[in-house]
Image (cartoon, rainbow, N blue to C red; front, side, top):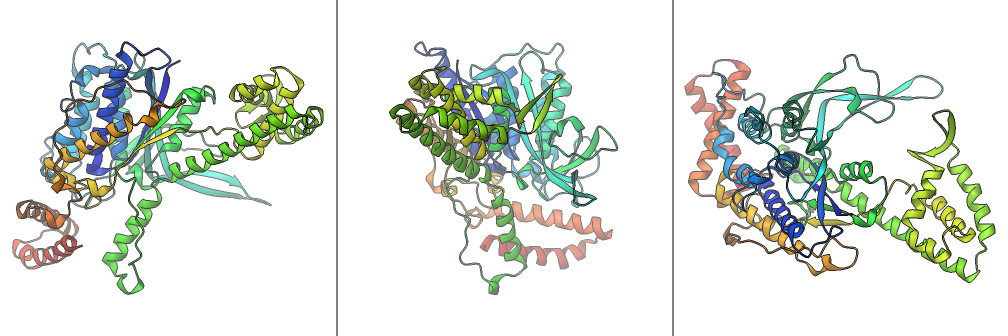
Length: 560
């Protein structure tokens, strides 16, 4: 069985160029590795899960699309869909161009600072233009792609979805959930269809709709997509909801990747499962010891709240995974001790089995109906299924005790009781490789990640930085150790020299011409916003009111 890789891509704004560089290098490495003469079937690596938030959702959708159907577009490190989108096409000029080619009216400044039209065009060209051809070209599948890929994108539902919970002694508590997502299973044969990818295109754009910067996006959703229990009835199915950036509430969807993996793996063959986590924010603290009551004015308060709120959505899944891994490691250590004590006779298998049986009767006491039978279940597992899973997961320990022996059964049931009591039954050890970087080494991190849009040089810099960071991980000797993803047989291709003078670039470091383009664009949008709010706005008022106010704000922004 090949090694299976699930990739999670964080929100990044213009630092999507860094993530594009990482993904380009990873896909090239896996391609080279899989076709290398010395690579056996068990050593092959296939990507079967992609999840992303915000810019990461857009990158995940692009990678899934091109890997399944257009692998021939990956021609080189600087000639591929990721480089085309994140380095060549998206820039400040396009984001400030609010005139829609399809409409005589400008994009309202009351809906967004920047134009979403450019993003919509790029998404269409990348994800659905394939279906404009007649006939649609046959799919060309990447050597790194599984035959089907589970795609997940985070969303923030501004309407919210209601869940009802009974209250004692009567009534119901209604919880409105705004954290949302879209997941789809895509295959080479079954999902190469316009309607499938139009839905994914729109969801990817919605996930990338950074609040205020880009307009919100409306999507049609089906009730069947919402599988959490206690979902309240819908008036209409499908219903329409309005969405903003998926990274607001879930910026690092590693947990989503694990859930999609569970649907594929069913908690088996975990020794061949790996996770890759791609983020441009991995090595920077957001703590600020200088923030005090005395400087908590509107500007500093809003700036700090943005860091607090968005920062809390970052790395939650990573931290959870690390904590679960620690619990599983402790359980494994206890299992090892248990084997030794059973072998030495310090613990008697008969008494241990009786104790474990009693515990399992309590832990699996909730009855569930399967066909005409009522069986004990925890979550999606019956007791028999859980026992079979433990026998598979701890096959080496059971082999030491003697498969089918009374001691092995006592060991199995004791470990299962410990696992279930610790709520680890649906958890697995996750081997996670992080490809993260300090923002001090990136050019586009300033201005909440928007600075990279100012100049292609900054995006080229961050793309190449992503390639180099990925290369360091892919060639690390640690990957060659038993049980790890490697060794990966690939020869890195050329990379443009990285201009270190762009590391940690600040707004104030920008050439005056670039600063002026940004200033003029922002003033124009604010002018349009005021005009839309209060009606006709005369040119003298622009000069007397807008110019000095915006200059003061922008000067402060550049200083900060």
